[in-house]
Length: 379
Image 1 (cartoon, rainbow, N blue to C red):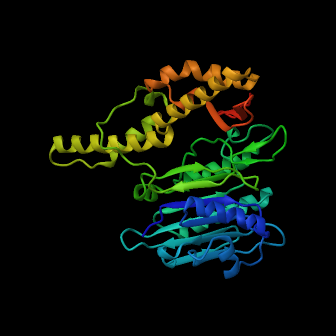
Image 2 (cartoon, helix red, strand yellow):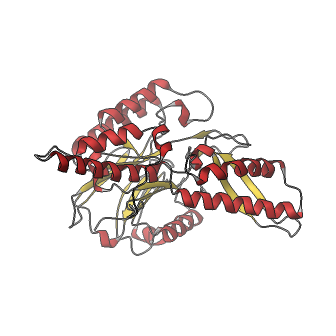
Image 3 (tube, helix red, strand yellow):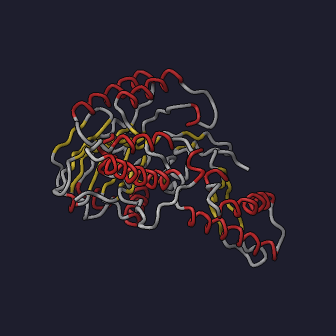
C-alpha cells in the first residue's frame, strides 16, 4: 500500500525527552505513515529511541548520523507499508524506495542541506547523483538551506549565484516545486523583527505527480523548532462529482496556462476527432480542479473562516473597544466578504491570514494574538 500522509520537519534536535515528546504528539495527532526528520543531532538512533519518538507502529527506519552536535536525518515508516525494496545513504541525504503491491515503485529522498558555499555545491551535485541512481517516480523533500529567488527571504542579502545553481538543478531534473498552502516562509530566527526564509520544500518528478495527482502540501505550527513542519497529504484533494464550473479568476493566477497546456497535450490523438476532443476536455477539467484546490483552496471553507473571525470581532466590539490590529482586520474582512462570495476574489488575493484567536476575560472576550498578510507583511 501507499502512504496517505507524510511529515517532513527540521526538528532542531531529538536528543532531549521534551523534543521527542513534541514529535510523538505531532505524529500521533497527524496519523502520519512516513516521517522525515532533519537535524536530529544524534550519532545513532536505537529501537528504543524510535519507540519513544514515534511509537511501536514504526518498525522500519533508516538514519544518517549527525557529525558532532550538528546534522543527522531520519526517515521512518509504519509497519503496514512493508520494508523498503532499496535504499541509499549519502552525505546529505537518505533515499528509500517504496514498492506497493498495487502500484508502481517510487523513490523518496530526504535531504538536509549544509551551510557554506563549497558544501552547497557538493550538495547540489549529490542530488544529481541520487537522481541518476533513483529512476522513475521521485519525491524529494527536506531542509535545503537554499532559496530559488529573492522572494523566498523577507529581508537581507541573497546569494544570487547559489540561487541560480539551485534553479538550474530544478530545471535540469525537471522537478515540480509543490506549492505550500497558507504559508510563505518555513524558517524564522525568532527575533522581534524576524528574518524569514523558505528553506524547506517538497519537489516531485512528473511521474510521481501523475501517481498522486491529488496531493496537497500544508504546514503545521512551529513547536520547539525554528522550522515549521511540512505536511504532505497524498490524497487530500478529492475531485468532486458536481458539475464543473470554470472560475473567471483562474486566468489571472500564475500557472493557469501551463496547467491547461499540459492537460491538453497529455491525451494522444485518436482516429475519432470527437473522442480525442472529449478526452482532452476531461483531462483539462481534472487538472484544473486539482490545480485550483492546491492554488486557491476550498472557497466555501475560507469564506466560513472569514465570517467567523468577523463575527467574533463584532461580538468583542459589543463589549469593548477594538485594538488597532483588530480594527484593521475587521475593516479588511468586511469589504472582501461580498466579492469573495462570487469567487472573483479568492482569499489568497485578499491576503489575510489569522494566526490565532483566544478567549480571555469577560470584559475582553476576543483577542487577536497575531496578524499577518500572506505576502509576509505585518500590521
